[in-house]
Amino acid sequence: MATLKTSVLGIDFENPFLLASAPPTASVESIDKAFEMGWGGAVLKTITPDDLEMLEASPRYATIKEKGKVICLQNIELLSHETIKYWIDGIRYLKEKHPSKVIIASIMAPVERKEWQNLVKIFNDTPIDAYELNFSCPHGMPERNIGMAIGTSAEISILITSWVKSVATKPVFVKLTPNVTNITWIANAVERAGADGFAAINTVQSFMGINLDTLEPVLNIDGLSTYGGLSGEAVKPIGFKCVAQLRQNSNLPILGIGGISNWQDAAQYIAIGADAVQICTEVMINGYGIINGLKSGLLNYLETKGFNDISELKNIAVKKITSHEKLNKESHLYPSIDKEKCIKCGKCAKICSESEYHALNIEKECLNLNREQCAGCSLCSHVCPKEAIKMCC
Ligand SMILES: Cc1cc2nc3c(=O)[nH]c(=O)nc-3n(C[C@H](O)[C@H](O)[C@H](O)COP(=O)(O)O)c2cc1C
Figure 1: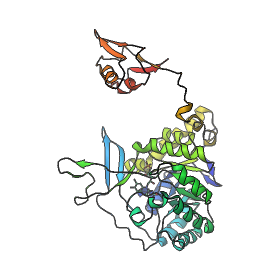
Figure 2: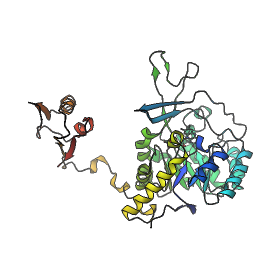
Figure 3: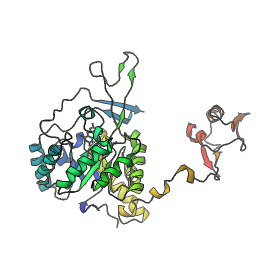
């Protein structure tokens, strides 16, 4: 029998699914409910010193939908609106009621030793399991030299990580931003400064566009807008890339985040190196109840594969990611057309000829492949509206 139980830095997880720091972890009441429903843990909405002002804009969300389904969410929300006292009491309440759940305090403060260390000293005396340093919020905070302004500077990231590590009595994860040229540069820096693990990714900085009727921003706050943070399914490939790069570069534990909407996404994060995962947008869209499918799906997958737990799945696929130089350039696949499915719309032939090659053409209602001309690029299989093309040897 496989199990979803796992252990990271000596912290026992009843399952690897955590709520990411975000609206679903903004109140003790809702975290309590999520724990009842089976989540393995929660990263609290980022806590800051009480005197750091959090004035929110309205509205603060915009989405891109495909067939009614939200594929990405942009937000310009700030951090927790609750006081430190609220969270101290809340953590104690939650841990007493749910001793087996993992509680991670996400924290952020101005770049001053006293401010960061004060926060840490306060939460050292609560039953949290770990810290997550938010070096990665891309909106609002960087204007005040914090959030992503920290996580895009190796120098400042090192400084704060070492301040925190010198007083923290619990493990310290650093939550990294994908909004850098190479996430491993900052990861290496904080690892050298003593970080115990990474959480990645935070949201991807973005701009949602312009309403062409009004010529005002789509995310419109009284006629103006700002750059926000993108999350949800659309950012998953960026999350995958960052987690794989982190794993190829370090043995520290990784909490994988970004675009997870089902157990398959979570399993992939684990296969490329994550030790556990965090989810935000999918919960904001579909509620805490998604935990049932996540747990049963992942458990069933482990059993089908003959794995006892996620440690046997972890890292397996990361070895398959290499440099372009090392890819086999001798291998060449060709499109194979399923005649039953093909409606001879000609889209594949048109795209093939207009995107460099001239390998496909329709003659006398028949789709033909010129193997000499075919580059094996696979674009035809992706544009086919009937999924009638597969790439084969
Ligand atoms: C509305 C909203 C608020 C968020 N607030 C925080 C926050 O306070 N602290 C933090 O570290 N990350 C915050 N995040 C980022 C998420 O924790 C997560 O890293 C990101 O959304 C990617 O995961 P997802 O694709 O599952 O949403 C927020 C995300 C959203 C959408």
